[in-house]
Length: 284
Image (cartoon, rainbow, N blue to C red; front, side, top):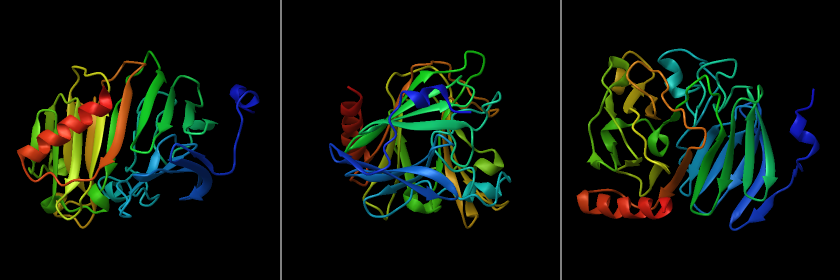
C-alpha cells in the first residue's frame, strides 16, 4: 500500500545541485540510499532505515562504515550493524527507525537539499537538511508514549584506534580517556555538543543539539570482542539521552541536531576553545 504522502511529494531520481549540495540515488549494503555530496562530506542515507550508513569526509575516511554482518550480535556488531546515525527509536513497533539496515521508514526527497523521513507507523517524523558545511536533523514528530535518543556509533576517522583518538565537549577538551564500553566503563554527563578526532587526521566530527537539555548522555569505546578496547575493530558509542541502563531519555518532539566536519586537530585547550566558538556559531 502506498504511503499517503506519496501522492503529494515529487520524487526526483537524478542528481540535484543546490548550494554546493548534490543528491542522487543508489544502492548500498543491499538497500536503496540517497547519496548526498557536499563540500565537506558525502552522506549515505538509507531510505528505509531512516539513518546514515556512511559519512565520508573529504579525505575519504568513513566515520560510520555500516555493514550488515555480523547482524545484531554483541559485541561483534560494533564493527557492523550497530553502526549508524541517529539510531533514534528503540521501543514500540517502530524499533529501529532512524537506524541503517532496518526497514522501518519511508524517506522522500522534498526539495534540492531536504529529505523527509517518516516511520511506517506514522508516529515519528524528522527532516534532514544538507548544506555545504554541515547537516541538520530536525525532529518534527515523536511518539508521545515512547522516548528516543540520538546516537553516533562508528569508527572515528574510519578506524577503531582508541589510543590515537580523542574527543571534547562544551564541558572541556581534548579528552583522551579510553573508556571500555564492553567492560561497563562509560562516561556520563550532560552535554550540549561534542566532537571526535584522531591524531593522524586533520579533521574532526562535531555533533550538537540546538537546545540544551538536562538529560544524561554517554560516551565509550565498544570493541567487537571480549578484548574490549584492545579489539581489532569496533566503534565509539555516543548518545544524547542515553542513560546508564541503556534506556532512551529524549522526549522533545521538536529537537534539532547538527552534524558536520571541521578541518583541524584539537591538540590543546586553545584549539578546543577555537572549536567551541566555531560550533557555537553554527548553533546561533
